[in-house]
Length: 277
View 1 (cartoon, one colour):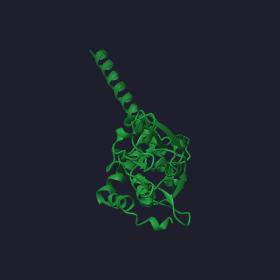
View 2 (view 1 turned 180 degrees about the vertical axis):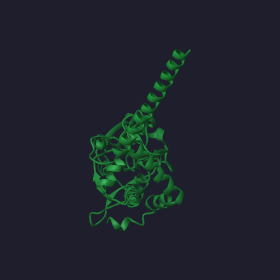
View 3 (view 1 turned 180 degrees about the horizontal axis):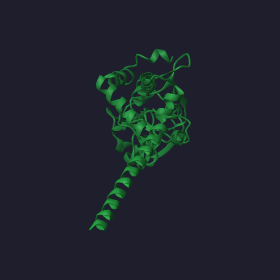
View 4 (view 1 turned 120 degrees about the vertical axis):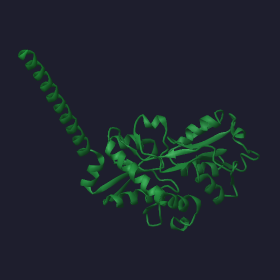
């Protein structure tokens, strides 16, 4: 009987020892993840490095060469709330995710739509804004075009910015049209104004702003956007602490109404236009 009890005590002690060891090992792993997270590196560095591309009204240079725009406001306030400085790293859109993955900057805050394909490479925060695709056309080349179906022909050329969700939207809604891809939005819109393509598909509100600025040559075939896309911060995978912090920050400033106020200023008005001319 004594021998049986002894074996039972040894078994229970062993189970307790291994359980405590497992818990300790798990706690150490959690501490290592937290210590090596991007958010801790930003705090130690004292600088938040933000990857973005230049396109109105998300991010653009003013007359003095300083970055302004919706994304600039968002990143600047984020850095201020973290108690660090902000550094903007302009990067061509087609290479912006590879640049994030190689550590060129800490986060993409650049009007990036959340898509299943992109989410295979990066982790997205909760949405902090929404956008949609619209189309602006050349009056001479697209006279009488008043629907997406009007543009869905092999004889029609559509300009889009390379690597954006405008490419997917064009392929889905006007699959028969010929796509011409450009590295930057200004290149695409210049080609439209020159009459070399029928239309440009891009994120609102830029197409409507182009139609208003160049009303002698351009027009809006549709009154509204034809897609709705959530916009999020993009961070490297395997960093739950950084993602949790960004999600908390977005929740707070959204509840304050601050995000909506900045969105309305940059997207619903052109009060800022004199800053860039």
